[in-house]
Length: 174
Image (cartoon, rainbow, N blue to C red; front, side, top):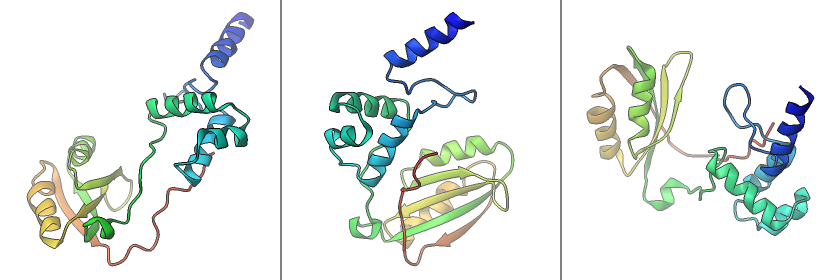
C-alpha cells in the first residue's frame, strides 16, 4: 500500500500535479491549477510570467499547466463578446419539454451553431438552450424548423432577451 501511495505521488509530481481524476472521472485540480484558472478568469490575456509570479511557478510551468487544462477540457480561453455589437440582434433562452431520451435531444442542440448553451435540468423544463441569432426571423427559423422538428421535442417556451445586463464567467474555483 505504501509503495502505491509513493508511486501515485511521484506520478503526480511528474505530470505537474493536476491530472489525477476524481471518482466521477473529472480531473482533480490542485490548489496551483485552481489559482491559475482564477488568474485567467480575471484576464484571459494575462501573461504566463505574471501568472507564474502570482502562483509561484515558472513561466514554462504555467504554460504547461494551462495547456494541460485546455487539453483536459477543464477550461477554454475565448473572447467573450456583446452579441449586439457583432451583428446578433436577438438572443433567447428556450425551455424544452421532451419525451424520451433527453440526452439525444441535448446532443442535437449542441450541433446547432446558433445554440450557445445547453443544460439538462430538473424542474419545469427538461432542457434549457440559449440561442443567439441575427434577428427575429432567424430565431423563428431555428425554433420552428429545427428545434421543434427534433423527434421527442414535445413543446418549447421562448424567453426573448430584451437587454443583456450582465454576462460574466467569474465564478472562481472551489
